[in-house]
Image (cartoon, rainbow, N blue to C red; front, top):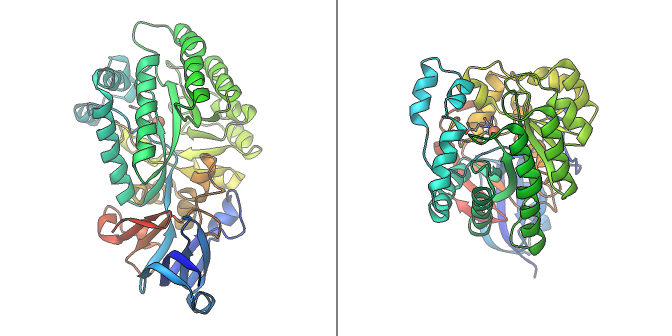
Amino acid sequence: MSSFKLLVKGAKQVVLVSKNGEKFLTKDGMQNLAVIENGSVVIGHDGLIKAVGPADSIESQFRRAVFDKVLDATGMCVLPGLVDAHTHPVWAGDRVHEFAMKLAGATYMEVHEAGGGIHFTVRHTHAADSETLLQGLKGRLERMLRAGTTLVECKSGYGLELETELKMLSVIDSARKSSPIGISSTYCGAHAVPRGKTMEQATEDILAVQLPAIQKHISAGSLQVDNIDVFCEKGVFDLNSTRRILQAGKDMGLNINFHGDELHPMNSAQLGAELGALAISHLEEVTDEGIAAMAASQTSAVLLPTTAYILRLPCPRARDMLDAGVIVSLGSDFNPNAYCCSMPMVMHLACVTLKMSLSEALAAATINAAYALNCSHTHGSVEPGKQGDLLIINAPRWEHLIYQFGSHQELIRSVIIKGNIVYE
Ligand code: NIG
Ligand code: FE
C-alpha cells in the first residue's frame, strides 16, 4: 500500500497559479491563473507534490493510500507558499528614530548622507556578534513564515568590508540550515560606499578582496551564496562600477539580482538586460527605454511597493511594465527603513498603489518571484513535482488574502513547507 506525508482535502479553491510548468508568467497569463474549485493536494514523504486535482478524482485515485496526516480544508482556500524576492533581514539596531525624521520631511538620501540610514545599520551590525544577528534573523524569518512566505531572498550588505559581509553571509547560511523557510542568499557588499572611502576604492576592495575571499569559501563548501547585488544609484555605485561588480559575480556563477533606477534614472534596466540579470529591483525611475530593454530580455522586475509608500516616492510603473511584457515580481524589501515582513500586505499595496490586479499580484508573489530567485522549477505554483509549500487560508475565495489587509494573522490557517505543517 502506498503511503504519503500529507493530504489536504476538499478545499473550496486550490490556486495552482500555473499548471503547465511555466517558468514565469507575463501579463496575459497573470490575469488567468489556474484555479481548481473543490480540490485536494497530495504531498509525498520526499516533500514534493504528488497530485493536485478535483477532490473526488483525488479521492478515488488515492482510495487505498495511507497518509501520515490529513488536513480537512472544507470551506478554505489553498495557495502556493508565497515568495519574497527582496529582503535585507540581517542587522542590529532598528531605525525607528529615522522614521520620525522622514515623516517630518527628511529624504532617504539626506539621512544617508548625514551618516544615518544604511551607515547607521552598518555600525550596529559591525558591532553585533553572529549569535545576536542569527537570533534577530530567525525572529524575522518566523514572522515572514507566519505571513505565508515559504521562500525568501536574504541579502548581506550592512558590512561593506570583508569580515562583516562574511559574518552576515554565514548567519544567513546558519538560518538556512536551522529554519524551515527556504532561503536564497545574496552578497550585497556594494550596498553603500563605506564612510571615508571613494566609490573607486570601494569597488576595488569588492573586486580584489571581498569577491575572491567569498569565492574561496564557496569553493571550499563553507558558504552557499546564490546571487550578487549592487545598489546602482547616484551617490552610491555608478553604472560602470555596477557593471564591473556584477560581471565579476556572474563570472563566479552567481545570479545577478540588483537594485536599480530607484531614486534616479541610471540606465540600470538596460545594463541588467545586457548582462543577462535574473532580476532588477525597485525601478521607480526606470525610463521607457529601460522597460523596452527588460521586455526584450528575460530579466524580472522585482517591484517593492513598501519603498515608494514609506519614502513617498513615485510608484514603479507596474502597468507599463506589464503591458510591455516584463516579468513582474514582488518583494517586501524588509529592512530597517521599510519594516514589513508581510507579503499579503505587499500584494495589497501592489494592487492599490501600483494598480496591479489581484491575480497579477499573486502571480508576482509566487511563480514570478520564484523565477527572480532562479527557483521557479521547484517553487511558486502547486504542480506535481514541485516542493510541497502551501498556504491555507480560512476564507471561501483566495482573494481574501489580499483584500483583508493588515489581518493575515486571523486569515492564515496553516503554512506548509515540504509537506510539513510549520505554522497553524
Ligand atoms: O532596497 N536602496 C537600497 N537598499 C534598501 C534600503 C536599505 C536600508 O535603508 O537599510 C532598499 O530599500
Ligand atoms: Fe533593497
